[in-house]
Length: 120
Image (cartoon, rainbow, N blue to C red; front, side, top):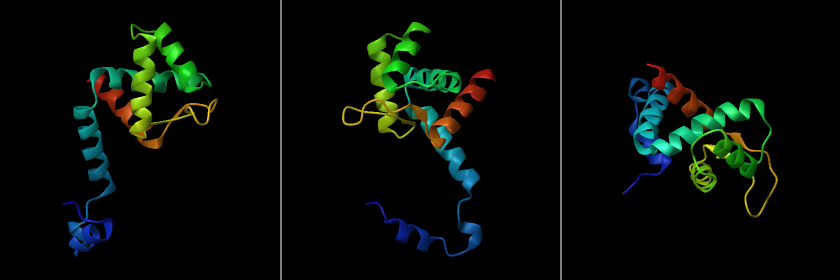
């Protein structure tokens, strides 16, 4: 059973016992790297690059992604939706169409990490 956030914070009674932001961020990055599919990682990285230079909706991003890579449009769209479900990407949906797509802070951090780890 999972503890509530309040119960978890009570477990760390000494300041030295509390995880640092850096340790939590490193854990998040490693976990995401292990759990995301290679296609999801590629779509996230390409999205970060494209959104730096273009203002696009999620549909527009899927279209541009598919035209500039080997990822089919339907696969790009499906993976962008999964990144939205993981709160790595924000944008419109069927209820609220036309919103600009953007990576969340976590999405930008993960995309940068994946870009750096691919270079090494």
